[in-house]
Length: 380
Ligand SMILES: [Mg+2]
Image (cartoon, rainbow, N blue to C red; front, side, top):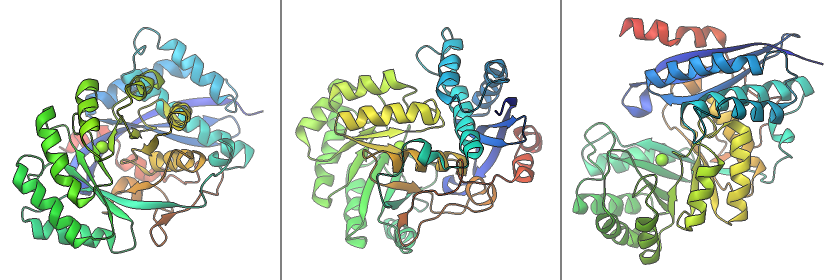
């Protein structure tokens, strides 16, 4: 039997080319067993202070993991939950810590048993999943934004999800007429692609504004509109859903099953975003995916950080009938393409079930070391 001997939180900071090279922050976790097996987990902390806080909590929680059998993922997950009764009851930084530890333990478990995490979750229910590009527009002129999206989709991707209210000169999400013109020309330039609009934190539409936009977009057949009223607005979302035919996506800011159950019960969410690096790991995501399936809604992995989160998201997405597609960042980036020996990519627009033991990735420690936050932030 294997025993966990070490749980090491590693905050990393890296420039994200898909976000104007903004410095983004993650807290990775490396779990090592007495027989030398190493597993990797990730929390998508985004901000340096959140990464450092997560590191402190992982260090504190480590005593509930060291000495344990890594096959006991569920028992350890419950024990970590129990530890966070005071500072993580409704989610928050504690959920990041639980997420990263849990993902690393599933990786170890798969490697100990010599099977992919997907198989530990019960196996694939999809033969393949269509992939889309998920990105932020980088240009001011609408024609250039359409061309950029066409370039992303050209290798065979099934569609594109574009962030509104992001950095740069795109100015999407702020002017009704310009937004409608943008969506019109995107549809014209990508007649057969799925198109999704994802409203970022900077977009503060009220219900009437959201309704006017979404009604105007209807003609161009969006696959879904994401977070048009933010993370939580049950009455606003009820209005929007009653009055428009467009599917509504939200949920990515939830921390745990309680939060997801709350939004599912409103009956206003069609596509439920879940990040395994935030919503309590593979164990947490799996529980949420089952509830989403029960409610007959769609679950969607919010996997927009490292290859570790992508690997965890792929395993769950393939194991759940509620998941229908998979998002990829279109531009090469260090945490996807440098971090692991074999970066993720689609094959003619599709993702296939991961087949290697654990998460199926080989993390390059030299790369992890080069992005350690203490090193990167010292240079800023
Ligand atoms: Mg989103």
